[in-house]
Length: 155
Length: 173
Image 1: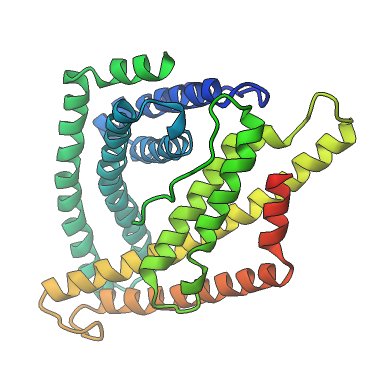
Image 2 (image 1 turned 45 degrees about the vertical axis):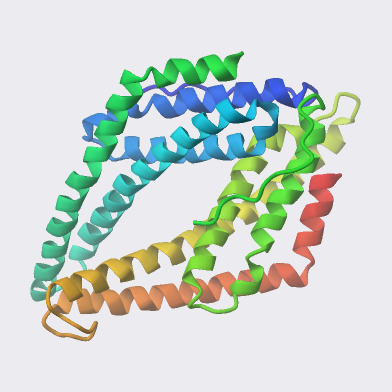
């Protein structure tokens, strides 16, 4: 696992706006630090971490929306929502596959056969679900999303 | 999935600490807006929505944990007590999230198994042509039932002690 950026503690007596900027930037950086691992696909934890961090980031953005100009904020928020949704589709299948693989040991030979069929079916779906994720990652690069996001929230 | 409730009353120029006391109670209310639906086990969608709202509350509490700790002029004792109470409330929220997560996982597994059975030409879950699927459906239904029962028991126990009122009172103090 890559070394993830730290989430720095904010000072509770600071104005909300500056804290909100710091939290959003920190979570964004943390989320993006999992992108490469998620792209490779060798370890399912990268997709999991990227999804969870995107959810935390969205919660922060929902809470602190009033600190930012509405129109540009909405665009960034929408993109993070897309990241959560696409990562979610891959993660849900990862979890199901692992769960059914674990169940195999608890089943008899004849019972195992159809669960193996189900696992193969889910693995095909998983391959399909990774395609939109890879397309999204390429689009984030192409559009310089990371730079634009950080520029907006760093101020 | 239901959208988060719109947060109102936030003042960007006011302190983080002050805004915590505006935002967190609204997150608690969002969780409790699903309470009328939890008494029926079949309310899958609403239980799922409650889980998402609980997650939002958990993350928001974690962001704001620093706003419930040491105040500059407070004694050490006050700070420790406050931190401890915050951690205890958060522990309950994490517990709700986990158990609602288990219920949701079971619902998803049941849906996947039923879909697979019907795609494979087996119309009912009892169809013995897919014995593994049939067995896992039965097993998952049992664990879903047990998790739901545990969730309700925990919820009722906390409600009887006035948990919501205590949580709101702490978060706005």
